[in-house]
Length: 353
Image (cartoon, rainbow, N blue to C red; front, side, top):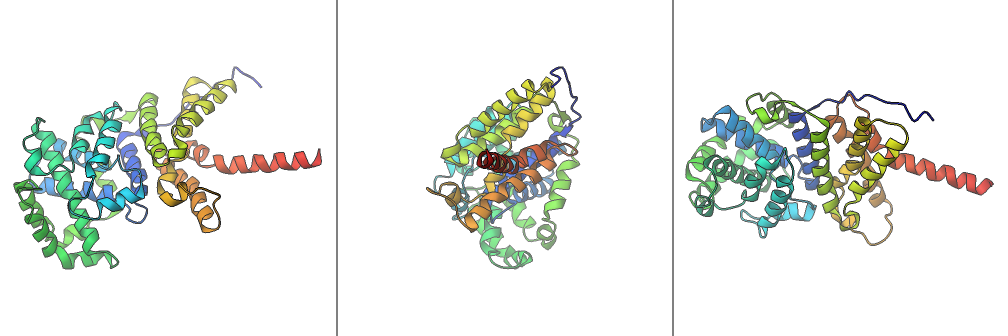
């Protein structure tokens, strides 16, 4: 093997696309209630427009909403958050999300928003935080609870049937005006939820298209360098590993070993870093795996095994969005199949030796 070989990387990652990919991965935790983060981003963005917020503030609100549940690591916790207007122990995932975002250079600007996004307005208004952070936090809290009400009233029915409950949704949020929710935002939201077109336009592809067109919020109107890509990958890897106590730091360990092997095989630093990123994200699809399967004390059988196998494909789909026109998604997603084939090959050789 020629140890002097070098490879060049043409991977280009748009910041906006990366954030949308993270939101897709975080939405996996909901399992059946998917796209919650996207809907909250859309609801907050539309209400912010009604309030005549400037574009920069609207765009920051949209991105913050995509990340607002980054501290939710289990499907059970996600379901608890959909159980009541003021769910029990909601602050726990806010604090975890705050810590994860604060540790990331690109995402730290959203940390305070996530930390307080379940804080009642009666308390939030007196906190020592800047006005913009308070406004965005309050609007995301309200938008999050509007999506909770959407889920409550449209449960087990056609999605468009939510328009039959517009008055009830408005009535619910208005009853918490000034206590749970900021008064002016509540009035604007009550008008918004009574518009049929608001609900009909709550389309996943359209919501993503809104974010990809943003130009005003400069920190996210650029392409990521390899260091920023690694930071975002580590952020996601920590969320994946937190989902299961049996795989704590597993993704980081796999990534470190993979990079070491890549360097030993003659890849340059940039491409070895991309292998490292693939290692960090190789299990991101497990966010969609139900808790009871990940936590099962014993071998998986039948349907359980089929559900577990799916995570490699979910990983590939997620990373194809994160790294368009790159092999990195295939590297991360195909690792289980390659290991299976290797084991099969070794068993055959062992049997004929």
